[in-house]
Length: 302
Length: 256
Image (tube, rainbow over all chains, first blue to last red):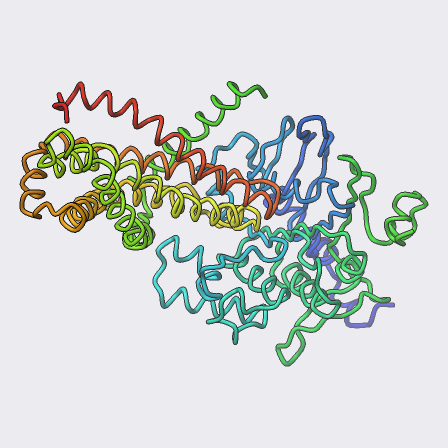
């Protein structure tokens, strides 16, 4: 019911339209053309080694700021997908696009430019044995000839992000498996890539350390708007990535909250590969509700 | 794949590796620090083994040939025979074989380990070309250092021969050395330095190729290391024949 004041000063039609149609963040995202272009896109990608088909006309996209979890059994094509995105392998047919750019036929020199946008976290870290933690994390910057003062600042920032500043002078052989993975993450994040790929980053780690790795991925998704691919075969990782989000509290600390009953969009989707095909694509709720016996057996282990 | 096809494929891969490594030499970044480090490992690190090889090769040459030379009354030519054998042939080939065993195995094992632990993939994903960062410094270091190692082996071989000639066969060192000086020609020295340049290229390219094409985990590293040493040694020996023939024609080398 209008108040006497509102009756005396009627609202014009234009004001009503402007007020009701104030853009939301979602609409902003749709209207922003750049965000509409997927970060990663596979179009009908086919790859076979001798007689074994690794990827059989696979199609999927990773949107901006999305984490795509790729599930599947060992040898199912998960790591191959990542190698294709990095240009370490070429598909037999189909197209691969990064930020709308077709990289399928790119040579090694052209791929160097594309790789600047991508950070890669390898299984077991793949740290350079002969270099210290500092030199490992600084690797990309040293190759680019960046001034040492700036290198040190960036290295310390990255090691702080993965909570490993005290290991800065250690050699990889002195680190535990989990620490090596975290240094690998720090190294991958130098240069603030907008696409990060995790290749089974928690394999062989104890649950608390695996949880730490997942938290880093969640932080990147929610606080840095990074698009990522997270290859795994561990269901616990999916639970973390699909049900928790990172936020910064009043004290400036990063906290992880459960989706619970709050309405929020956790930007994680899951695809599952089997013998080169995508047999599932969707959210974690859909995965849990599936009746497919293969997927059920994969999730439950029997 | 039949053996001929496999050989041609491997030759293509090695050639492509060499070309991409050398083309990258003229572009930034320049990996000078890596080159100097490799020269230290290859040159300084291999010196003891090469000097020992040279010394005892010269010694055994005199041990075996002096009695025969004495039988024909030409024992005063012993120094010349040792020097020309070493400088033309034994110095370059034996030094190359020693370096192939020591450095060739180390290169292929190191690169193979990097392949199986995904360090090479990590390097590429971080924007570095492994051919420029790893392969080129190693091949160049071998090409630079093998001639120096060969000359050092030749010198020690002559000394070894002289020690045996004077110690066992009572020939004066002066007689031995004069014979050496009279026997060596500039063509011998040039040929003796040209050969190691090619041998360095062969050892470096074969070892790097084998290392970078390692498959099959740690077992694969062992296989590629063995393969690198065997293949580079065989190629050195076969190539030596053709190179010797070519140098004889080009340099018009006199008979020993």
